[in-house]
Image 1 (cartoon, helix red, strand yellow):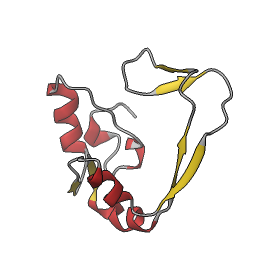
Image 2 (image 1 turned 90 degrees about the horizontal axis):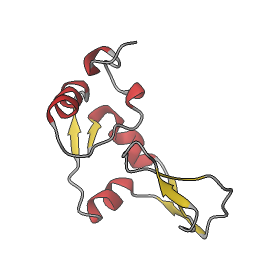
Image 3 (image 1 turned 45 degrees about the horizontal axis):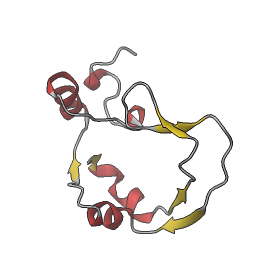
Image 4 (image 1 turned 45 degrees about the vertical axis):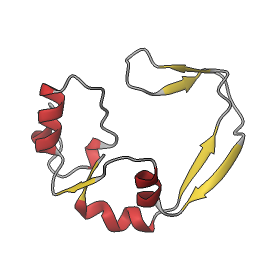
Length: 104
């Protein structure tokens, strides 16, 4: 996982709420993005606040990198990788859309 370094303090101070959903109605999106959606309304099984987001990420064995800018890395991954990847909230990144090779 890569995050722009200037977001680190905001991530450290944010409380994110994790919802556990019933799996029965969720299906993988057809775009192979790794996201699952339900076409039916669901009621969460539970909700828990996550106060240490970096700690939770690292506890799952995820490699976490703080980078100055995501654009240069995103272009390489997007153009050269055969692995599955996603870019969440890239519009919030410095240099978007020009450094990402995306048309505005």
